[in-house]
Length: 112
Image 1 (tube, one colour):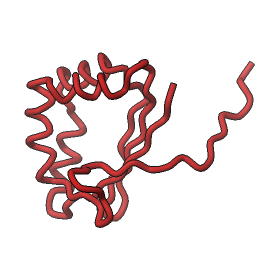
Image 2 (image 1 turned 45 degrees about the horizontal axis):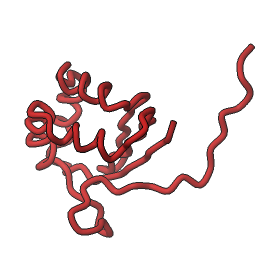
Image 3 (image 1 turned 90 degrees about the vertical axis):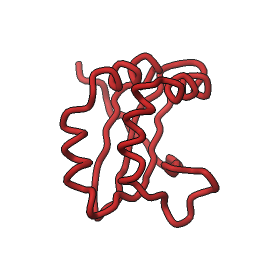
């Protein structure tokens, strides 16, 4: 399993709409996320910055992300979400969500 964290800006004028959509994510989009081996996916918001965290449980992340990007329903979802988002100022060319580097992780003791 690999952990991923990403950030992107949310346009202030779209905050309520973004939250509304994410309160009822389309089942087809959720199924595609699951089929692409993503688990424990969360998006947080503060001061118009979205922070996403998820765990990848597959063996070929790039192939799974290509599969997700090729999905018609996911493309339809992204067509609605993308205009609400704005890449970070220091994002690379063509980069939407900016990857974060993990610098610390602690699972703690297992509960027995």
